[in-house]
Length: 368
Image (cartoon, rainbow, N blue to C red; front, side, top):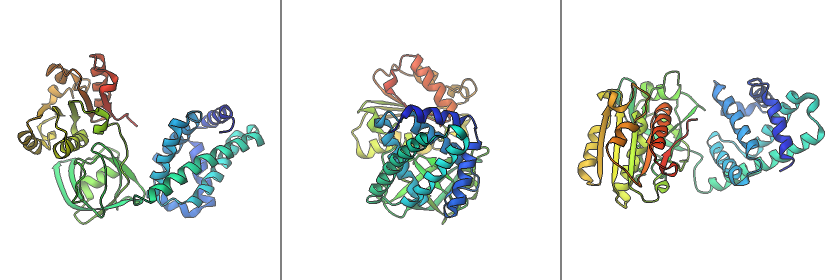
């Protein structure tokens, strides 16, 4: 791209204006292209953060095409679910340049405008090409009819969907979900089952304080409602990352979902390997899926389930579950998968690493 340092310096300068930058950008965008407003949620707070984070990553990786290009391609594919088409990128580009010009003031030189224009042309081109390629193999979204909604606790529900067309995914990949109650508001969930030929997909949902999508799914969703699901993404929690090793799976709460999917994928597709699942919860009610897990354990001699409750799970201390896991075996050479709340994952991964588990054997999703 053009002078990358000039792009970085100017973006850093604009960033000093904080939240006013995305506010100005979206105000300008909706003014020149009012038809795009329905693509965005009513509450724009999260969307503004996503804009700043995406721009920040693009500028940060501008000199690293091996990192930047896949990121842009995924952005392009992701935007298909919002019905973004090629001509929308022109309006976004105009809004971006107007925003930069407004906040840079006298520092907005013709040379800098030319550099940002060239950079945005490359960014938009990569996103459009990826979206067009994806449209040849995937729908913009899948429709999932709710055929089961089982309350497993006051704030937790297991939702079963029937997809309108097959979705190919690896256990551990996540999908973005939109409810009919909150149009254009999406949240990421990881299916709790391996991909099935019958198109059924199970989601484990805990209502998050202050959240929008998760409370709607726990308390307001009904059979017959239709959700939209984006394309599956992510590699960190898939079996491919383990390179065939035996596994130690550590789940807290609904962090069980991707790990249960992994167990199903091994059971259905193989090859078999030794798998130990540690399932932690604050109290016995939090072990909401234990009966089914016991059935899996009885049917598969390579699987061992260890429930952990309260103090045993570490939930009243530093939220780390590493202690009981490390005391249960040597686990030499095994891959560890850790899923749960951000604080639990961070603490558990930290303690496992401090205990000598190599970084390349630790698989988890970074907190976003």
